Image 1 (cartoon, chains in turn red, green, brown, yellow):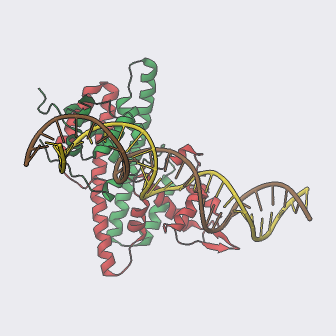
Image 2 (cartoon, rainbow over the protein chains, first blue to last red):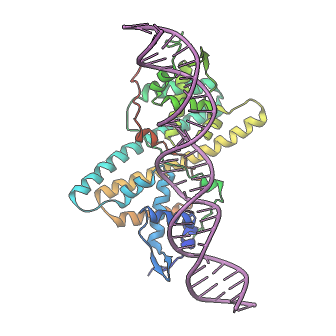
Image 3 (cartoon, rainbow over the protein chains, first blue to last red):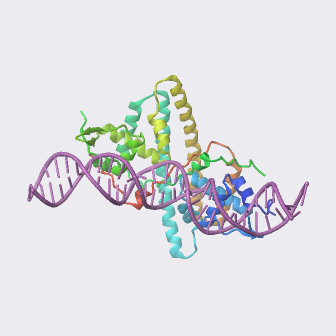
Length: 161
Length: 161
DNA sequence: CCTTGCCTTAAAGCCGACTTTAAGTTGTAG
DNA sequence: CTACAACTTAAAGTCGGCTTTAAGGCAAGG
């Protein structure tokens, strides 16, 4: 049924554009469930690929690994826990909205700087941010640096398969 | 002319929601120009406030400090440098667009998870990301962690002045 | 049999972005 | 005169997110 039943760790890594070490790390911290093993070695299938696709997207969008675990893989069924999950999600949704806003603003700033060139643009933008920026939506919550993946070799994803 | 001619470092910090140590750090790494000093102590004015407003917004939107320096404060006039700047900006604009996309996707995923509840939603989303996600816009470029600002005391901004 | 290649683990290292600490200066109030 | 608050610096520490290293296992091929 699954076109790719068993992937080794480095095959999986290849597909999602990560390195094996990152995948092991994700397992350790509970982003991935302990993988099935065959003679001691981890094996994965397509559901893992999909899961990691979401993880990657989320990381790139500024989610921390903690948030990813809580929000995407942290819904247990108990009403208690589920309530907590809903609270967290609502919170994160709000954050995402203000984040979108911020990105929009900066996109605009960058574009204006490319045309009109120069500092008053910047100064003026800072002023605007301060003024209207006081609409206090819980600000995001910067995650951590992934630039490693650039410092070290880039890990190009396999285009498909 | 400027309603607030001289701010001490902690006054400035207060206004932009940073701690003094962060501001000194920004000066060290060239995000802020060496501040004017009066009897050895740094003094700031409104243009610094505005500058930091932009910096903050950019940090929250996932820019690294390096990018912020290069993109917002790194346009020198030489045609050579200016070309480089334009290249970087265009690149970052593209990144911002794919980032917006990603955020949109995840927002959708989170919302669907709140309604329909559960994993197939997630699985399905992963699949979609993999399929169309291969439109290879240079992915962002995660910056680093600011959660410190939460671990340590939050530093509430002064509402205005 | 031995090399090659990919796997394993635990532990240490690294980078970005700050914060904390330690030690010292300065201006003001009591 | 002293105490205090708020500043200064350099250096060390911290945290998240990985990567690298060191030491070893195991199957396939020559």
